[in-house]
Image (tube, rainbow, N blue to C red; front, side, top):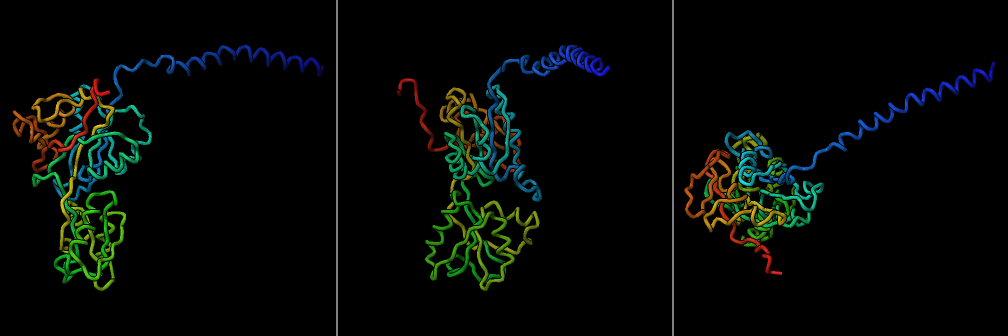
Length: 327
């Protein structure tokens, strides 16, 4: 009886496995089907637009109406129309981190502080070149750093802060950081000011406001930052004052990766021709225009980026592309 039961169990197992075999095969085929049936790519990989502009609406506080709310998604739409290729967008404060998972052949556009993009590209081994800069509401493509103090501080200018602690709320790679050190040297302070680094401009401003030192420290922040600090409630409006400025340095610029062909980049503005990515940038937003395009009007296909007038202007120094005959 025992052997008969054992035989029946073995037979049942064999029969069951035989019955399951077609199901297992079918399940395998269904699992593999999406891979096997995956259609080939119908076009080039999307261009990656990395936005590092601190006044982009995704990166800035919305507390100040119409300020720091630049809409780069509209820029992406214009670029797509210009080159008839998809553009994906990422907002970032660290270019090397954003590029970590990006393939070496990917076409990339980066918009941000010129010095920070250049430093980030070097760290990320991204070969790229600047093609144009964005003007601010004042019509300039540059920005200064601000030396700020408490409103009740007797100091009125940089020469009055000898021996004090200066909290620098700028990245070391930021051109305004070097400019702030140069300003302190030029002031000829005796004794010299003592500089300390802070992780952000808001940290520098808050440490200034909360300091119990006497005399209190001074802070260095970007030229655009004070309205945001006050509007977002980080500091009380009117509690801080500006006692000095650094030399203005280049601010927002557009960089194109060297993987983007010269044809896709398009002719420079000096030629007055609208083709390729440069054409998309020239027409990239309602209140942006190409100021230096020959034969183009200031309002040519403008788009609203934010309140106020902004323009793209060609960079003075542009990498020379290799030609087929240049070896």
